Length: 399
Image (cartoon, rainbow, N blue to C red; front, side):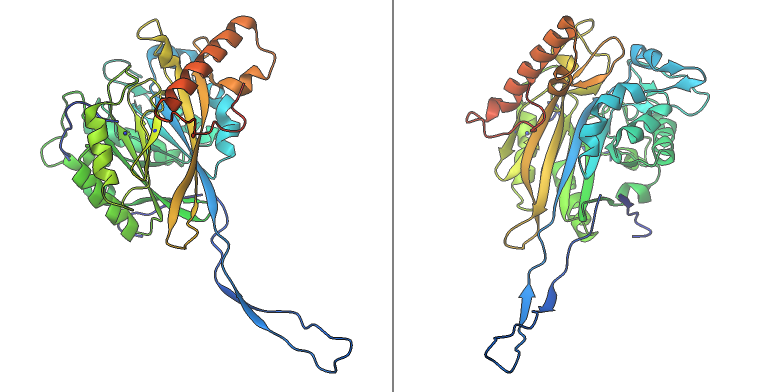
């Protein structure tokens, strides 16, 4: 269940130069006093009752994250149906993975078109608005939307995108239609745990918001991220997730700028609980920076990036699942474990296939080989900063 809180109502990843900010489930149990049932000694003539205090059960939940959703012309052409576009079949294979999580969040890298507007591709993206319905239908509850393409169609493009997400029932963070919306905390309910979400980008391909409207999109600035995270805590967030659009495209390695930002966030204990990276379009490692979990780069979820334009590894991606829960000492909520499911984005129908799960079915040899190769590449990359193999694959994601 999405809890949208507005101001009026209440193993690290970045580009070489950081732009300054141009800006579901049951609730937690409560302490209870219970009276123990009377016990009778056969030789006694009286009964005795005792009172004990029980601790509330510790809450746990899971959050799933998907990689870049970058809609090129071949993707929307493949989704064309009479009267519009249907991206649902492309995302259907990962629906069970998302459904198994208490909360699922996507990363929408492109703007969305209003009815009657034509979609556009590189270099200024505008995907059909029906994409929002498909993301919601796949199981996502919301999306991070700050990216280097956020301003591709200016202020009107930002508004059209957020209107489409609203209409689909999807939460969003990273761009805004008003300064009030920019300051509004974005909270979700994950199994009774209030999860706050923030989103920022390294830059906007040389574009800038109009003067005085820097709030249109959020740029990476560690000091501002920490300030926003504190505001989220004050608004009730028990766990804070920061989505960062950063890193070098088509590069698996972590840049110095990425690490610098992650270290700045990790240097303030308890400010941020999880960083999730996007933009590189290829899988990057998962590791810890201090006590902070960092998913450096999820790769692509749905796009046309492939050997035709870029590199074969741009077809690889991840759905990462974070298990969160109350600390044993009762001092708050923490990320308890990270697991991952390698995915592969085919180039015929653009289905997003969980590699290992798909191999369990009747798969023709060419596809099987592509899936095995993708899985192996992804597994090695994700684990590259975990030499002891400490990061587990999702239980269902081993071929």
